[in-house]
Length: 231
Image 1 (cartoon, rainbow, N blue to C red):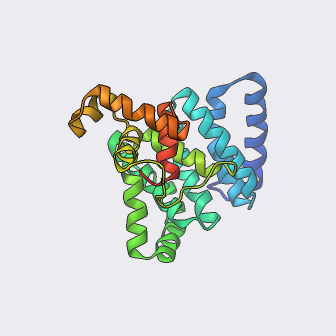
Image 2 (cartoon, one colour):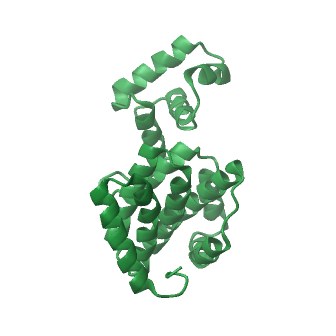
C-alpha cells in the first residue's frame, strides 16, 4: 500500500525492519512474502546489487519451500532486474515464463503488476526488434516452473555463467536433445518413449553426459540446458 501511495521511503523502512525480524525468528513465511517486495524497492532506489542479492535469497527460499506464489513474484522481479541492467532478451524470457505459468495455473495477472511491467517490456521489445523479442518470449513460454525458477536464479547470481547461444561442443546432438528433455521435466521413461529408445539407453546417455559435463543431478542438467540455451 505504501508503494502504491508513492511513499517508497516508508515502504522501504517498514519492509526492511519486518524482514530483519522474520530472519531473526526463522519466520520463512514472511521472508517468502517480503523478499520480492524488497527487490522492487531496491530497483526503485537504483540499488541493483542489493536487488540481485535479495532476488537470489528469495528464489532459493522459494525453491526450498515450494511456494509457487513466490516463484511467480520472483520471475516478475527477475524481468525487472534484467530490464534495469540492459538484459532485454532475458527480461522478456522471464516475463514470458511468468505468463505461461499463470496460464497453466489459471492465475490472473494483477493490473498493478501489468502496469508496472508495461514500460520496461515495451522498451525491451523495441531494443530487440520483433524477431529477437519473439524468440526470447518463445523460450520463456516453453519453460517448466522449475526451469524458469532456475533460470531466474542463474540470472540473479553474478557468479554463475550467463545464458549463451548454443555451443555445447563436447555433447552430441542426441545428448543435447536428452539434456533439453530433462530440463523440460521429462522422466527417463517419458524420454525413452519420445525418442523411441529403451530406458536403459536413456540412462546410458545420461551417464555419458555426466562424465562429459560433471552434471549428474537433474537440477544440474537443467542448469546446463539453460546456460547453453537448449531450453
